[in-house]
Length: 113
Image 1: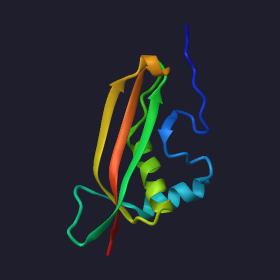
Image 2: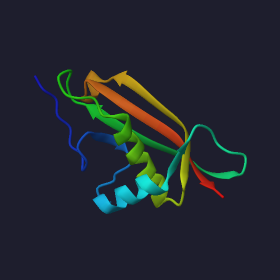
Image 3: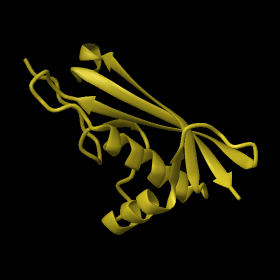
Image 4: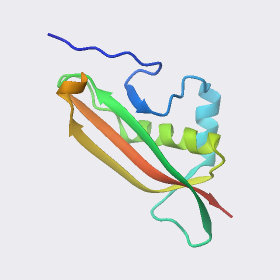
C-alpha cells in the first residue's frame, strides 16, 4: 500500500510554497542570502523561516540539506532578508503523514548591515 500526497513542489509538504518562484529567482536568492552560524549583534531579525520536505519511501532519496537551505533562502529573500542563521535540520519518521521521513529545517531570517 502506498500513500501519496500532492504539492505544488515535489517533496515539499509544508512551509514555503515556492511554486511562484522561477529558477532564476531561486538562484538569485541562493547567491544573495548568506548562511551564518549565529545571529550577529548588528542584525535585525525578521522572524523564523521553515521548510519541510518528504522522503516518500525508504527506497527514495532523502532531501539534501542544500535543497532545504535553498527553500529557506528563497523565502527569506522574498521577505527582505539578506541572511539566515542558526539553521537546524531535524529528521522525523512520518508514516502516518504519507512520508517515510520528514525533514524540517528552520532558521532565523536576518537583515545584516
